[in-house]
Length: 626
Image 1 (cartoon, rainbow, N blue to C red):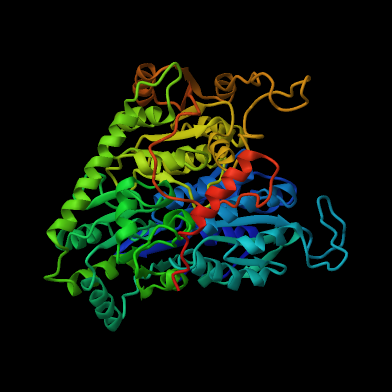
Image 2: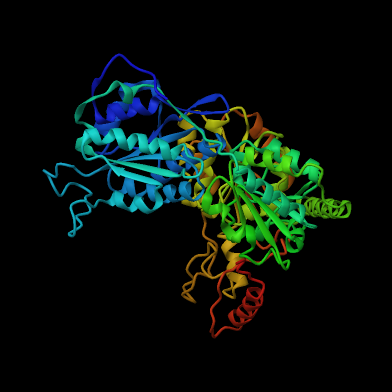
């Protein structure tokens, strides 16, 4: 829907695009939201005279935020979009060359997680009068190729604007994809630097305010009836809540379904928080990083109802978890490909309206009391396991679960935990006690090292009234910490708990499990005697590094000190980094689930041969679900 303006305007392509973006809105359930909260960027010769000039002229119509790394700015936009339930995001502008290719990882993360972000990389001259220009790829096969083509496979929509009039259909198509719950992800409009500065008479209709309704497609009545019949036939049903439950605002509908039927609910990483952890039907995380409670029910489930999940290998424990003969799947999903996964019965619909329809169709039916009691007993047993992990009293260095427990206990009921990569996402998934649908923000679709601080910045931009606790290991911190500077520049407060364990704890444990003895995963210096990386620990002062980037820093050595530091950070108005060393060899409670990581079929090492034997045993449980 558009509203008219006084008439056409002669603008540069960049000016028209910025004005267009400032006038885009989403609308869901009668509430309108600005689609673009602003534009993150780093300027270079490919965008400073075009997009840079346009943003300067636009002022607060499309606020500009200076980032420190192009990948990080996409993470910030993604964090904002996820916290906004995909109703709002940021645009990201870069120059051509390394600035543009730095976007690729962030774009992949956005697309894999089905989260909207608009990428505006500069491009080489459309006129080609000065070829080859600085940072041009010079592909000898074609003048049409630039480094921006690396963004095509990780974008849900890609267009290169070689003429001013091409902006009109491309911009509208970009908005269509960004606001489609089933198709959203990274969208790229590549902008040749000469075209950005070229003037054109843009029609009033293009520049007018435009509202994009967010669809809530209802399920087909016959499909609802068939799905309900399948659920009614179950003796041991299990519902798995994915991110779609939260993005569609369907948590109340989910609670209504389980209150009426008693079906227990497990949660994926993106779906964690769909129910409070202490809800009578909640059995916690599912899969390779799940709880023993959820996974025990999953192994016996005869009907599994997946709502808003894309069924990743972690959720299915590499297709080894759902072991009943036979097991049948009902998949309620707005995305058709996800609805048909695992040979499931497809219920294609928005999660909110789909759950409401399914609740009506299940009126009068409930699980057997003994089954509901078993689910509650298993969940209570797991909570006792969490208590023990949170208060293990391990020493001299604390365990990572104890650190998580301290943060969980200090965080308020609406505060947000942010994490992405390493061992912490798995431990958070099974241990963190979530009390709010937006209180758990772990990026695990791409599990991208370096997401944490930049993503946490986006979360805080979207929810300034909540405390944001970023949990990050030293490996991930060293990948991408510089957005601490952006937080300082913008006076945006986040609380970063920096856990140092001298290496890559998650991959170290995985390496050991496949027989490789943590090879190449520890921060040890080259040993002149052996020639291997088995010397003394590398002397890196991460606390000093964080202070140099503008953060307040508190170094602690045990859990009581950590709790006090967390309370201090909550009272502070500035970004605070709390540094603590942990013992990487203390495991979290076992999920009792498998994950498919191939092991060398032949090897000279006994450890590798033993790991291969375990792997082949695990493969026996893998299913095709045809």
